[in-house]
Each structure stands twice: as C-alpha cells, then as structure tokens.
Length: 199
Image (cartoon, rainbow, N blue to C red):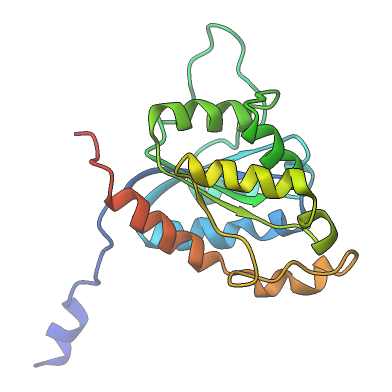
C-alpha cells in the first residue's frame, strides 16, 4: 500500500441515530455537558440542548449552540411561534437533579424541560436519566420512590454506586471529573436500537 492510498483511506463514520435532546438541570456538573454532546455526536446523534432555568446558570449557552448547530432552549415558546428544534428521537437527562426527578415522576410540567419529558414519555420516546446529587439528598424517600417510578415507566435510570457513588454533601465538585458520560451514550445506543426509527 502506498502512502497516497493510506492518506485517501476514508475515516469510519458512525451510523446516523437521529435527533437527541440533551436535557440538563441546575448542577455544577452541567458545566461539562459539552463532553456528552461531543460523545453523542461521535456516536451519530444530531444533538439539541434543552436546559432548566437553573441549569442555564451553569452552562455556556453560546458555546453549546455553536457545538450543536441549534439554539439552546430554556423556556416555552410563545403560542403560534414555530419550533426551532427538530423532533426528538431520544432524550437524556443529565445531570438530573432531585427537584427535576421528583417533579417528573408526578407529571409536573412547570419548565420546558419537564414538559418535553412528560410528553416524550407518553409518546414512547426512549429516555435515559443520569441523576447527580449528594448522598444526603439521594437518601430521601421521595427521590428513591421517584427513581423507581421512572424505571417502572421504562426510563433507563443510571444512578447508584455502580455508576458513581453519591458524594458527601459539599464535596460534589471534587467528583465531577469522574462522571461517566460515556455510560449515558452507551445506554442511549441500547435503548434507541430497540425502537424502530421513523422514515
């Protein structure tokens, strides 16, 4: 094989998987959500980012808009305004906070992120949730019950010692670098492959 043919050899390209909504909440971990966006794009997803109002305090909205090629959504659109994002084929909620998980489990839709999740669940869209919280909040019975309810509804919940042990209160920032973003992408691959894609 010549040097010329080696240079011209095509790079492997991931199969297109569809549109993924990355929904992020108010946590310092949200600052690193661009890592997930990059991993998902490499895996063939067209990524759109939606954030809760508190999540917007942590992320770099212009940088994520450039990275995805789509505006970052935070609030409900005005009646009659067109949708600016393509419909989602799958969703991942990361970091999913205790507040968002508990509201989601009882069907509250007071943020755009929650409204999209509740509607997507009713439509059968594959959803992966990756909560991130401290050990004290993780032990609350309502949170534990909410996680079980989401699992019963076929949401893939990645949480616990096998994912990342919840840190002690006040130490979360020390563990952000250990968060397993790739685990979320792998779970999406499994979930989406089990659902026929439109078209």
